[in-house]
Image (cartoon, rainbow, N blue to C red; front, side, top):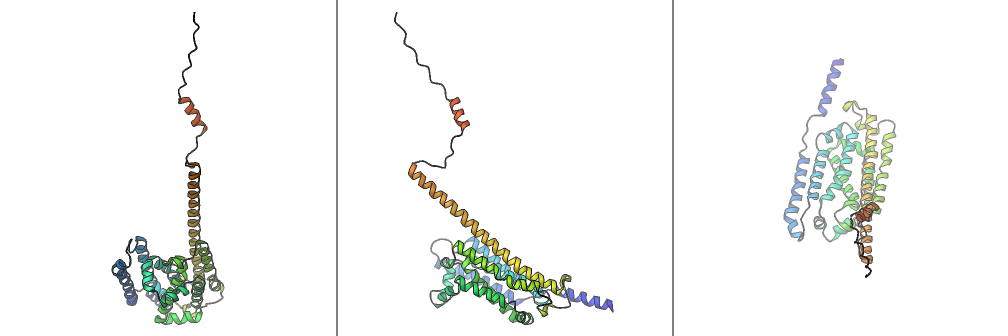
Length: 318
């Protein structure tokens, strides 16, 4: 009897890692790549008169965004997240919210964004939605919705609903990051407001994260399954998911805040020093940042300089 139970458990655990193709993900990936290439090769040359259609950084960002989307939506992360571990589900959300969204925005040139949005109602609606307050509310509201137990349990049991929730998550994340790194310059915040915006974005998700970490019992009954991947209990799985949401998301945003702060500070200091040097040059007529003479250099200069000849004294006439 014990041998039968052990064999059944082993077969079920092996089924966790069984390869399951997701053709719909492959089709979507191919479609996204084809659309990007079409925009760059066909529309780009007519939209851009001076400079490159896309930069190397934008191409790298798009490639990275596609890889993140593919790995988060395909086997094995998607299958484990949908059937076994809520912590894997949280990894999916982290990849789509904090990695995919900003990479996608960084890969879009300004001309492409303006071409897609146009100049009419779509552009006005997008501008309203991407305002910092509106964007922050939309992003965090959807984060809250995706952690409601009824929504999570229903999405795990319904594949199309699960993909729909992820699609909305990606869209709201793109909206949330638009004031930070969007392709339209006038929609971006200045450095100081940007740091405040990111800080607030890092604080709000800690509410559901703390609830998951300290909740008693299993919050999401769908993940309380007999097969435990890596021997992880449902309670431990739930706590790890909360830690990923709290620490992973917050630390990621804090790193961006640090980068924005130091880049702005260093550039500001360098610009101020250049302006001060140019002003001194115009006033004094010489460069003020030339190295000053040291005492040793002055002594050496005196030593190397030959002494002047002594003047001859007039002789008395006899």
